[in-house]
Amino acid sequence: MTSPAGRRSLTDRETQAVEGTLTKDALIEMIRDKVGYPVKEAKEILEIILEEIKSRLEEGKEVKISGFGKWTVKEKRSRPGRNPHTGDRIEISARRVVTFHPSDKLRDSVNSTVNQGG
Image 1 (cartoon, helix red, strand yellow):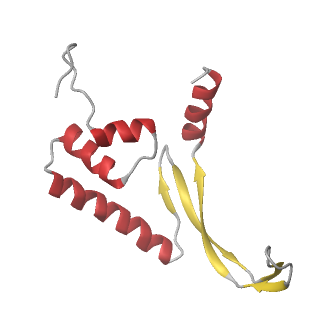
Image 2: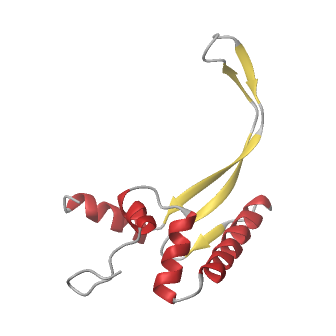
């Protein structure tokens, strides 16, 4: 689809990505449109990338994408807590949590849109 100005208009998925949550389907569509890969190949590429990130995190390794940020896995010890519904004391079990730390470049980019009123 092209607009009167000669630009291709956004698909429903791209519109959703622009207006709200960026989904896996929208990313696949963008890979297809921008690189020209068929949907099946674009999906395979994205799945490989996401699976590799997941595998590294499951192994407790850090995942760093230059200019974007890094994901790390932190070990949380068990600790006392309270059931918010009953107020009873409970033990919150030990667990691993994934944290994301944006790069300075990403943080600056996000903050610059706030400073520009966007």
